[in-house]
Amino acid sequence: CGFVMNFSNAYKNKRILVTGHTGFKGSWMTEWLLLLGAKVIGYSLEEPPTEPSHFNAIQLGEHLTDDVRGDIRSIDALRETIARHKPDFIFHLAAQPLVRQSFDEPHYTYEANVMGSLNVLEAVRRENCSCIVVMITTDKVYDNVEWEYAYRENDPLGGYDPYSASKACAEIVISSYQRSFFNSHQKSPGEPGIAVASVRGGNVIGGGDWAKDRIVPDSMKNLASNTKIPVRNRRATRPWQHVLELLSGYLHLGSEISRARTQQNAERLQALCSPFNFGPHITSNKTVEALVQEILKHWPGEWEDFTDPGATHEAGRLNLTIDKAFHTLNWQPRWNFEETIKHTVDWYRQYYKAIQPEPAFLRGLTQQQILLYSEGLNYHSSN
Image (cartoon, rainbow, N blue to C red; front, side, top):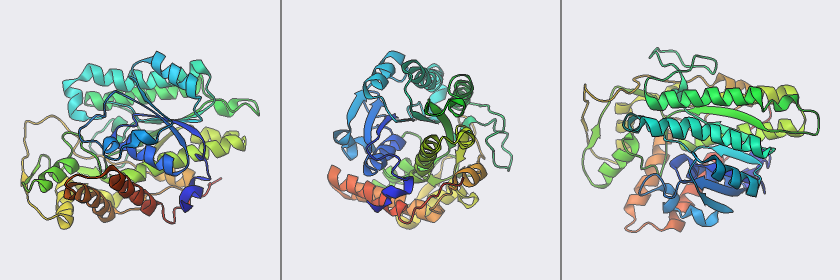
């Protein structure tokens, strides 16, 4: 794999703990790390969050160093896993990730998203595990006033719904731990300490997502069964991006923190141990209707308008500015809106086309898309 160098071999032979590795983003992240030569320890609940799931479809569990089943709300189970494996990196993705579910289960949402994040940080602190921790939150952490401007990392946090509010709370916890316990740029030379950053990204799409109430998985299921796609909120605008875009940002940030620690560059480390937005170019901010029409170019079918004025509140407009990621990390998205939809639909069509999709075939398809995305990928340190 020629693209291993793109992250400066930061992950080769490293022990990496991925929480939420059975989820949609977590399984793509785990597969990419395996391609980069990492030893991946997964930590998730007993069963993947959906059936079918990308994790099971590609039989990812067979390729892990350890496949730990535990609850993110249990600090003891987390501590035990961290003590046993002493990870070099932690990517914390485990969460209750759905806005609509947060209205049905607000208490669980806060427990999983706030206490789960706290438990990861506290377990790392108590075990004094000298590692790099990338905490994944969401674009919905901002106090969304539905204006036409993109949100920056220093804009006020908030949340209308329990999901958004829980993630904003998690960001406050992360910031508090960074400043109170993990000021790794202030450590004496030769003592790397614990480095923590948070990342905020939005609506990711891609093959293997079967989450409830998501327009892309719903569209694929309808197209596969030759029924009309029900569109709930056709005028809502979202920054659509492929799952690999966000993951490339997370991996790049982790590798840059690793480099700054090796170089004992305290100033650079301080700049990196902070929140980062990752998202698509502004031209990928499209309505749900535009998304569905683009999908139908690659998989012909029909859709119908199911807009319900009394439906649960969802943000109508939300996008992030990625200037900080560009200037600090030299990161920017690679696939435009059309490419994102093409690769997404291609994965699902191949899945649904097969009478019994072979895990080896689907894993190969996933790897193929990672390699395709990675072609010519060449991030340089910007310091």
